Image (tube, rainbow, N blue to C red):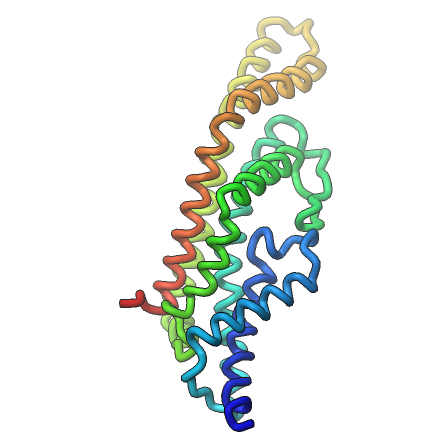
Length: 262
Protein backbone atom coordinates (compact mmCIF):
# COMPACT_ATOMS: atom_id res chain seq x y z
CA UNK A 1 0.00 0.00 0.00
CA UNK A 2 2.84 2.40 0.77
CA UNK A 3 4.37 1.67 -2.62
CA UNK A 4 1.05 2.43 -4.33
CA UNK A 5 0.66 5.70 -2.43
CA UNK A 6 4.18 6.73 -3.46
CA UNK A 7 3.77 5.70 -7.10
CA UNK A 8 0.30 7.13 -7.75
CA UNK A 9 1.29 10.86 -7.65
CA UNK A 10 4.18 10.17 -10.04
CA UNK A 11 1.91 8.26 -12.43
CA UNK A 12 -0.70 11.03 -12.36
CA UNK A 13 1.92 13.63 -13.30
CA UNK A 14 3.03 11.51 -16.25
CA UNK A 15 -0.59 10.94 -17.25
CA UNK A 16 -1.28 14.72 -17.16
CA UNK A 17 1.59 15.53 -19.54
CA UNK A 18 0.74 12.79 -22.04
CA UNK A 19 -3.02 13.44 -21.99
CA UNK A 20 -2.56 17.18 -22.55
CA UNK A 21 -0.19 16.35 -25.43
CA UNK A 22 -2.90 14.32 -27.18
CA UNK A 23 -5.40 17.17 -26.75
CA UNK A 24 -3.63 19.42 -29.28
CA UNK A 25 -1.15 17.32 -31.28
CA UNK A 26 -2.02 16.73 -34.97
CA UNK A 27 -3.74 13.48 -36.04
CA UNK A 28 -4.57 12.35 -32.48
CA UNK A 29 -6.45 15.53 -31.54
CA UNK A 30 -8.88 15.36 -34.48
CA UNK A 31 -12.56 14.82 -33.89
CA UNK A 32 -12.40 11.64 -35.96
CA UNK A 33 -10.40 9.95 -33.18
CA UNK A 34 -12.72 8.75 -30.35
CA UNK A 35 -12.10 10.19 -26.90
CA UNK A 36 -12.00 6.68 -25.44
CA UNK A 37 -9.07 5.88 -27.72
CA UNK A 38 -7.25 9.07 -26.69
CA UNK A 39 -7.67 8.28 -23.00
CA UNK A 40 -6.73 4.63 -23.50
CA UNK A 41 -3.55 5.31 -25.46
CA UNK A 42 -2.61 8.04 -22.96
CA UNK A 43 -3.02 5.57 -20.11
CA UNK A 44 -0.94 2.80 -21.69
CA UNK A 45 1.84 5.18 -22.74
CA UNK A 46 1.80 6.62 -19.21
CA UNK A 47 2.27 3.10 -17.82
CA UNK A 48 5.26 2.55 -20.13
CA UNK A 49 6.80 5.90 -19.20
CA UNK A 50 6.21 5.24 -15.49
CA UNK A 51 7.90 1.84 -15.66
CA UNK A 52 10.83 3.42 -17.54
CA UNK A 53 11.34 6.77 -15.83
CA UNK A 54 9.08 7.07 -12.80
CA UNK A 55 9.62 4.07 -10.54
CA UNK A 56 12.28 5.67 -8.33
CA UNK A 57 10.91 9.24 -8.47
CA UNK A 58 10.00 11.05 -5.26
CA UNK A 59 7.24 13.65 -5.56
CA UNK A 60 6.02 15.92 -2.73
CA UNK A 61 2.34 15.42 -1.92
CA UNK A 62 1.66 18.79 -0.28
CA UNK A 63 -0.01 21.84 -1.91
CA UNK A 64 2.94 22.24 -4.29
CA UNK A 65 1.66 19.13 -6.07
CA UNK A 66 -0.99 21.34 -7.74
CA UNK A 67 1.80 23.43 -9.29
CA UNK A 68 3.48 20.24 -10.49
CA UNK A 69 0.25 19.20 -12.24
CA UNK A 70 -0.04 22.62 -13.93
CA UNK A 71 3.61 22.40 -14.99
CA UNK A 72 3.21 18.98 -16.59
CA UNK A 73 0.02 20.02 -18.39
CA UNK A 74 1.82 23.08 -19.79
CA UNK A 75 4.70 20.93 -21.05
CA UNK A 76 2.33 18.56 -22.85
CA UNK A 77 0.32 21.44 -24.35
CA UNK A 78 3.47 23.23 -25.52
CA UNK A 79 4.82 20.13 -27.26
CA UNK A 80 1.52 19.46 -28.97
CA UNK A 81 1.01 23.12 -29.88
CA UNK A 82 4.39 23.42 -31.61
CA UNK A 83 3.59 20.36 -33.75
CA UNK A 84 0.06 21.66 -34.43
CA UNK A 85 1.33 25.12 -35.38
CA UNK A 86 3.72 23.69 -37.96
CA UNK A 87 0.95 21.48 -39.33
CA UNK A 88 -1.36 24.49 -39.68
CA UNK A 89 1.18 26.04 -42.09
CA UNK A 90 -0.58 23.98 -44.76
CA UNK A 91 -3.97 25.49 -43.96
CA UNK A 92 -2.52 29.02 -43.88
CA UNK A 93 -0.86 28.53 -47.27
CA UNK A 94 -4.17 27.23 -48.64
CA UNK A 95 -5.93 30.36 -47.33
CA UNK A 96 -3.47 32.61 -49.17
CA UNK A 97 -4.08 30.66 -52.39
CA UNK A 98 -7.87 30.67 -51.97
CA UNK A 99 -7.93 34.44 -51.52
CA UNK A 100 -5.91 34.89 -54.72
CA UNK A 101 -7.81 32.36 -56.81
CA UNK A 102 -11.26 33.43 -55.62
CA UNK A 103 -12.19 30.36 -53.57
CA UNK A 104 -11.98 32.24 -50.29
CA UNK A 105 -15.72 32.92 -50.39
CA UNK A 106 -16.53 29.20 -50.35
CA UNK A 107 -15.08 27.67 -47.19
CA UNK A 108 -15.83 24.10 -46.17
CA UNK A 109 -16.02 22.30 -42.84
CA UNK A 110 -12.82 20.42 -42.03
CA UNK A 111 -13.84 16.98 -40.66
CA UNK A 112 -10.52 16.69 -38.78
CA UNK A 113 -10.94 19.84 -36.69
CA UNK A 114 -14.63 20.67 -37.09
CA UNK A 115 -13.78 24.26 -38.07
CA UNK A 116 -14.30 26.16 -41.30
CA UNK A 117 -11.28 25.85 -43.57
CA UNK A 118 -10.33 26.95 -47.11
CA UNK A 119 -11.02 24.57 -49.99
CA UNK A 120 -7.47 24.24 -51.30
CA UNK A 121 -6.13 24.37 -47.75
CA UNK A 122 -8.36 21.43 -46.85
CA UNK A 123 -7.23 19.54 -49.96
CA UNK A 124 -3.55 20.09 -49.16
CA UNK A 125 -4.16 19.26 -45.51
CA UNK A 126 -5.71 15.90 -46.39
CA UNK A 127 -2.83 15.21 -48.79
CA UNK A 128 -0.30 16.06 -46.07
CA UNK A 129 -2.16 13.97 -43.50
CA UNK A 130 -2.05 10.88 -45.73
CA UNK A 131 1.65 11.45 -46.39
CA UNK A 132 2.28 11.95 -42.66
CA UNK A 133 0.61 8.64 -41.81
CA UNK A 134 2.42 6.92 -44.69
CA UNK A 135 5.82 7.96 -43.34
CA UNK A 136 4.74 6.84 -39.82
CA UNK A 137 4.83 10.40 -38.52
CA UNK A 138 2.38 9.48 -35.74
CA UNK A 139 4.96 6.99 -34.48
CA UNK A 140 7.52 9.79 -34.30
CA UNK A 141 5.05 11.89 -32.30
CA UNK A 142 4.62 9.06 -29.80
CA UNK A 143 8.38 8.62 -29.68
CA UNK A 144 8.76 12.35 -29.05
CA UNK A 145 6.43 12.50 -26.04
CA UNK A 146 8.00 9.37 -24.52
CA UNK A 147 11.57 10.62 -24.91
CA UNK A 148 10.59 14.07 -23.66
CA UNK A 149 11.29 12.68 -20.18
CA UNK A 150 14.95 12.34 -21.15
CA UNK A 151 15.04 16.06 -21.96
CA UNK A 152 12.50 17.35 -19.45
CA UNK A 153 12.23 15.04 -16.42
CA UNK A 154 9.61 15.41 -13.72
CA UNK A 155 12.05 17.55 -11.72
CA UNK A 156 12.19 20.30 -14.37
CA UNK A 157 12.31 24.08 -14.03
CA UNK A 158 9.61 25.14 -16.50
CA UNK A 159 8.44 28.12 -14.45
CA UNK A 160 12.00 29.50 -14.37
CA UNK A 161 12.13 29.23 -18.17
CA UNK A 162 8.86 31.15 -18.36
CA UNK A 163 10.24 33.80 -16.01
CA UNK A 164 13.49 34.45 -17.89
CA UNK A 165 11.69 34.76 -21.25
CA UNK A 166 13.54 32.04 -23.20
CA UNK A 167 10.35 30.07 -23.80
CA UNK A 168 8.40 33.15 -24.95
CA UNK A 169 11.19 34.04 -27.36
CA UNK A 170 11.16 30.54 -28.83
CA UNK A 171 7.36 30.59 -29.32
CA UNK A 172 7.49 33.98 -31.06
CA UNK A 173 10.24 32.76 -33.38
CA UNK A 174 8.29 29.57 -34.16
CA UNK A 175 5.15 31.59 -34.87
CA UNK A 176 7.05 33.83 -37.27
CA UNK A 177 8.70 30.82 -38.91
CA UNK A 178 5.30 29.22 -39.51
CA UNK A 179 4.06 32.30 -41.38
CA UNK A 180 7.24 32.44 -43.48
CA UNK A 181 6.81 28.77 -44.39
CA UNK A 182 3.17 29.40 -45.32
CA UNK A 183 4.18 32.27 -47.62
CA UNK A 184 6.87 30.11 -49.22
CA UNK A 185 4.44 27.25 -49.85
CA UNK A 186 1.85 29.57 -51.38
CA UNK A 187 4.36 31.73 -53.31
CA UNK A 188 4.29 29.90 -56.72
CA UNK A 189 0.51 29.99 -57.05
CA UNK A 190 0.08 33.46 -55.54
CA UNK A 191 2.79 34.88 -57.84
CA UNK A 192 1.21 33.29 -60.92
CA UNK A 193 -2.22 34.66 -60.04
CA UNK A 194 -0.73 38.08 -59.35
CA UNK A 195 0.83 38.09 -62.84
CA UNK A 196 -2.56 37.04 -64.21
CA UNK A 197 -4.13 40.07 -62.50
CA UNK A 198 -1.48 42.31 -64.07
CA UNK A 199 -2.23 40.83 -67.51
CA UNK A 200 -5.95 41.44 -67.00
CA UNK A 201 -5.16 45.02 -66.00
CA UNK A 202 -3.24 45.59 -69.25
CA UNK A 203 -6.13 43.98 -71.15
CA UNK A 204 -8.60 46.34 -69.51
CA UNK A 205 -6.51 49.35 -70.55
CA UNK A 206 -5.81 48.25 -74.14
CA UNK A 207 -9.20 46.71 -74.92
CA UNK A 208 -11.91 48.39 -72.80
CA UNK A 209 -14.64 46.54 -74.69
CA UNK A 210 -13.70 43.34 -72.84
CA UNK A 211 -15.48 42.87 -69.52
CA UNK A 212 -12.50 42.00 -67.35
CA UNK A 213 -14.65 41.08 -64.35
CA UNK A 214 -16.47 38.42 -66.38
CA UNK A 215 -13.29 37.07 -68.00
CA UNK A 216 -11.02 37.38 -64.95
CA UNK A 217 -12.81 35.09 -62.49
CA UNK A 218 -12.90 31.90 -64.65
CA UNK A 219 -9.44 32.70 -66.06
CA UNK A 220 -7.89 32.90 -62.59
CA UNK A 221 -9.59 29.66 -61.57
CA UNK A 222 -8.30 27.87 -64.69
CA UNK A 223 -4.76 29.23 -64.25
CA UNK A 224 -4.77 28.39 -60.54
CA UNK A 225 -5.97 24.81 -61.07
CA UNK A 226 -3.41 24.24 -63.85
CA UNK A 227 -0.61 25.50 -61.59
CA UNK A 228 -1.92 23.35 -58.74
CA UNK A 229 -1.89 20.31 -61.04
CA UNK A 230 1.73 21.03 -61.96
CA UNK A 231 2.73 21.46 -58.31
CA UNK A 232 1.05 18.32 -56.94
CA UNK A 233 4.07 16.05 -57.70
CA UNK A 234 6.24 18.31 -55.53
CA UNK A 235 3.93 18.02 -52.50
CA UNK A 236 5.70 14.94 -51.17
CA UNK A 237 9.03 16.77 -51.04
CA UNK A 238 7.54 19.99 -49.63
CA UNK A 239 5.54 18.25 -46.92
CA UNK A 240 8.49 15.99 -46.07
CA UNK A 241 10.62 19.10 -45.46
CA UNK A 242 7.80 20.63 -43.39
CA UNK A 243 7.52 17.53 -41.20
CA UNK A 244 11.27 17.62 -40.66
CA UNK A 245 11.00 21.24 -39.51
CA UNK A 246 8.12 20.27 -37.21
CA UNK A 247 10.11 17.56 -35.42
CA UNK A 248 13.14 19.84 -35.27
CA UNK A 249 11.01 22.56 -33.63
CA UNK A 250 9.77 20.06 -31.04
CA UNK A 251 13.38 19.12 -30.27
CA UNK A 252 14.32 22.79 -29.95
CA UNK A 253 11.43 23.30 -27.54
CA UNK A 254 12.65 20.41 -25.38
CA UNK A 255 16.13 21.96 -25.41
CA UNK A 256 14.69 25.32 -24.31
CA UNK A 257 12.63 24.00 -21.39
CA UNK A 258 15.03 21.18 -20.47
CA UNK A 259 18.50 19.95 -21.28
CA UNK A 260 19.93 17.55 -23.84
CA UNK A 261 20.43 14.06 -22.39
CA UNK A 262 24.02 12.94 -22.09
